[in-house]
Every structure is written in structure tokens, then in C-alpha cells.
Length: 100
Image 1 (tube, rainbow, N blue to C red):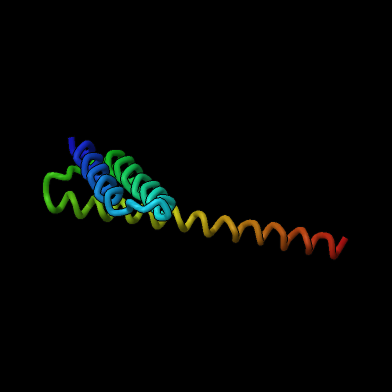
Image 2: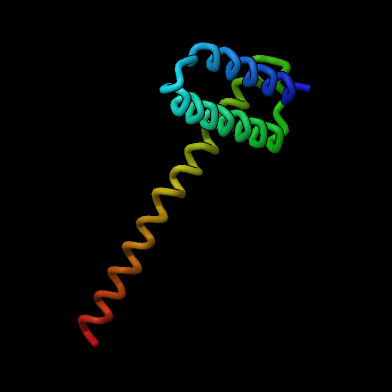
């Protein structure tokens, strides 16, 4: 039930934004913004529903926000750490070729 409320709110925000961006030149900005909002809504729905958080009280809403932002932090941290592993691998390959 709460997930449907989040989806309806997201669609309402998209409709309001579509009305705001009526000019053809701003359509690309609208599409990018719509995709970003879709990502936020979809990821929030998935993370909150998998955590089993009830959004009936203020404590549940705060716990859901904490869970979502914690997940978002760890997801972006994993993306940045991927570059570190690649640099370690390249560094070891260069060191290996220099000695051999």
C-alpha cells in the first residue's frame, strides 16, 4: 500500500515537472530529471521493502531514510573502490614486468 503511495507521488511530481518544461529545448533536461527521479523512487522502494520497514510512524520513516541513505552511501563507495583495485592490479603488473 505504501509503495503505491510513493509511486503515485512520483508520477504526480513527474506530471507537474512536465507541465513546467513545455519548451522543446528543455525536453532533454526533463527526460534526464525523470530518469533520475525514477531511479530514486525505484531504488527507495526496493531498499525499503527489502528492509521490512513500516512507514506508519515517524520512527519508521526515519529508519527508512537512514536505511536508504546508508545503502546509497555503500553503493557509491563500492563504485569508487573499483578504481582502486584496478590501479593496484596495474601497479603490480608494471612491477612484475620491471623485474622480469
